[in-house]
Length: 87
Image (cartoon, rainbow, N blue to C red; front, side):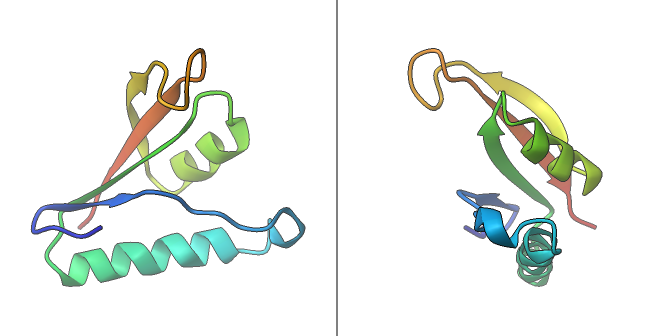
């Protein structure tokens, strides 16, 4: 969702059988580029705290964890909010 200052990715899903082929990276890169064109300066998203592959994926693309969100996905299911500055 773009705004003048930033965007928020609600979900980014790739079929398990299609993972590790660069599809998620391409999707996220496209989202970031579209946001840059709108003048957005940052992007944020959330993922489950126990989703180590997703956390590693986002961090490898320059996203930084900025908050832990207890109960985000329900009782006992915290999330991590990650942000990235768009240049």
